[in-house]
Length: 324
Image (cartoon, rainbow, N blue to C red):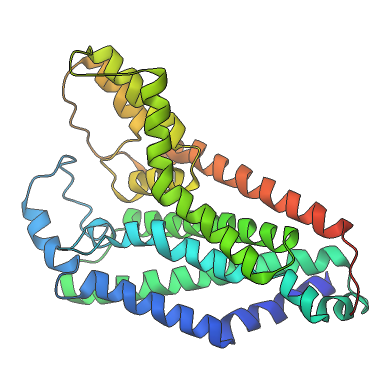
């Protein structure tokens, strides 16, 4: 336990105080603040959005609109977190966690000390996860404070708890990308190769996953202008199910339901549409029902992260490590 604390403290200090960490945090913070508070940011549209009826018709969760409202030409904070901020943080912190020390010979010297090999890996993963949680929490709290000062509407207790759950879920999402990057760091010897492999997976999920799931849905359940409602719904159901193979799709759906209390998952929406055959205008979900709704998404993210961790952990424990 003492060795784990030592490795964790050392890695956490390196992540937070190194030039890479400082520059990364500053760039992410400035980009996020500009997206929310800039001339065409989300804050300029919040009051207009409050006065305009939406598909959810939920006006009491005013503070949460700060995180889900898009600006003119600027994405929402939630979109930015899902697509860019957390994946970049996880990949940046993990792509050279193992192979860089192997190439420099420092890993062998570290293991020559009274420190177990599993402690090194666990300490690096835990430090990276905590770093992601600290950065995400700091940015969220700064935006919350600035937004509170500007819009003058304090969050309710339920809104505060939803934001807290969002931070927990965001940290778990970051742990997935950290685990993916560390897996490539263990499997691949070159640092540049592991970085490119991690970025390639990220790009695949962002740009190509939608096209692939659309192709799968259209192949299994093709639709055209003459298709019936049942055929269209079957096509959409297959598309939604395939999209849940993507961690981005899982996190985006879960956080949308969490931060937009009137939203539902696409699976629930399709079921209600099929059953009623009419347009459905949802009301706000209680917090307990929201957690039950997104629980499968959370379990899937945890399971996927655990699989990545176990594979990289097993490979690292069996590797031959030399000091030179």
